[in-house]
Length: 169
Image 1 (tube, helix red, strand yellow):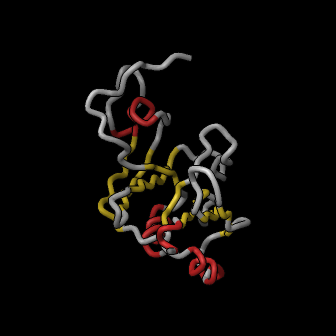
Image 2 (cartoon, rainbow, N blue to C red):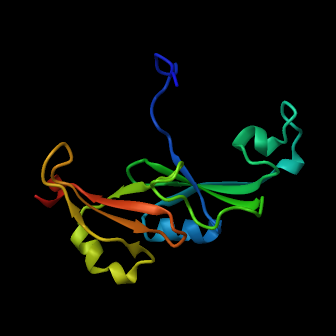
């Protein structure tokens, strides 16, 4: 596999991360209430059947690589300017019921900075999160001083909570 030898012209950086959820309203409530986002806009529904074909493909297949897709999306923003885009697909209806594992192709996690991981852990039972083992304390190397824990949101998406040493000092 070969890759380009230069950056995309005008590339300014990453804009947002997008994930698919089963209920847009529930996910917006979760990510805004528990994780401090603000919904900045909502669009859709977009239905491939309502648009003209593009290069012989239905609209959703041509644009988002989902044949006969129908979806609605919401864009969330966090205080530091990072953004999370949530998609709810109403069609197609046949799809896996769980997100990929980290080891699967397309596996992912989304990391959130926290200023006090101990405070989060002390209230763990009151959150709609499944806490995995941890926290992991990194004491050496380029990530020294970080404390992290992985959690699952109500739909099984893997999230990481990260505390940096400078915040604990």
